[in-house]
Image (cartoon, rainbow, N blue to C red; front, side, top):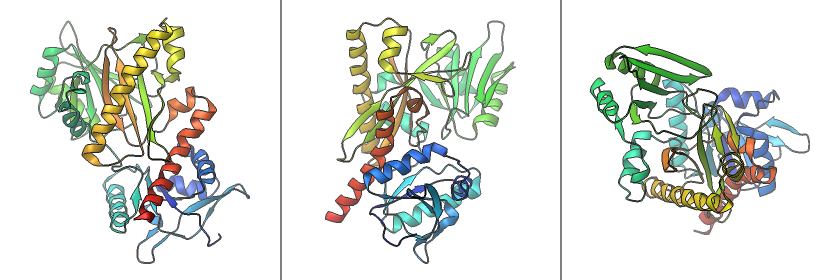
Length: 372
């Protein structure tokens, strides 16, 4: 590898198996790393993928990999520590979490800037934060931190269906939909690679199910009667980013349709916003435009509220939905959007821009720091 690197060096923090696959040309284009490599070349920055074991703070070097555009392959090498961190590390288990935390802490102590102020969101913290905002609060489903079976009783007092979610869960794998049955007992279902379902007779039993599937910190949330198309639940995702000037932009708002009878829209298919509401629901162009404006106003309000609490973010994906009366409901924020729905439904130009913006924003952050 050449010793001349285009600045800034953007460190893409990933799990070990993904980085090793890239180094060995196994084609594991997790999170479309191929598109990020193209975006880095377009932006004029150096993108280095690395995992926790690639960092050596004693020497101040990374042992990651960089894409060689001439050879069209990922090449392992030795690199300086990044100027900007693009944190997409997920990991699993306490050991990996600890190691990743040590890397994040070490980079922060060395003044490495971050695309996002935080690498994940705690759903309970975010709910508490947003509930204090008068503009956003009406769009939040009633939510409590699950501490006992009594909390489930409180939730079911206001709704026959609720959701139980891991506070730090992602990709819908720790989301349980529970419904009170007319004849007694509770039916629950959740999606983890496939749809699972079961039934318990008591709230105490449901409480144990929630703990076993969603973990130690769980929120209970009253279900919203969302739009459905052929038994497929519909929600939306606002893909929001800051561009090369640091300006907030709404890149796209794909509509997501879940698998049939799945309690969530994640892992389904997606459609373009205007196309879905005009062609499939019969909205007039004026009604589509009015809905989009209302949604964008809420998205910007949520983004601003998050940044005021945690610091600047280069990108956040915000999940929300519409009930059958047309009301907008906020669900959660995502600091590591996989951009799956966007890639499925948006045009090539929009997809390209969505991967380019983080690289341009990294360049913006670096240039501002250089001016200080």
